[in-house]
Length: 234
Image (spheres, rainbow, N blue to C red):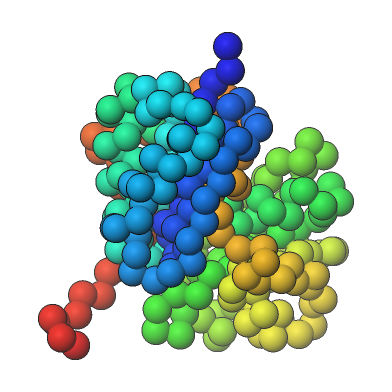
């Protein structure tokens, strides 16, 4: 019997849902419309499951982009994923949003290639993490997700120890390339290679295959930096 996984991506303005049977993606819906996650996520889940001819109860695992990313988007995605996991009695698996971005590179990058995933953050900052493509086409971590500025990128890059071919992916990848002119990057095009639930699902499947899962009650998004609240009307 195949195992069914539902994947949610809400870490950016993109709202995306994918349904997998084992490693096969059977349905994918993606909406790039800011501030629509709360209204659209659950209907998209229902529609994706209908496309895959599955019920919520058939889902074994719910994988969700866990951050870093948009505070509001992450909160909506994780709370929805927790509710679905409880309703389906399914395992909940959190996936780094940067690892999900870097996962795109595993499809075509040669083994041994370093991959920098970078996303724009608030206040002229960016989120970045570094990985390496293993011979088995999986990601091996080099540097965990961090909040950086163009002034701190140089020191961060030196700490990675990367020497050789490097790919960069994400909306902040061009900023990384501009700040590190001494190194040549192969930048994957954004938004063509952007956030969607397929890579969240692939990462979630890998984690679940290793027996990893979250505590549904206590799990929280990985915000990485403090949320800066604004006064109403600001």
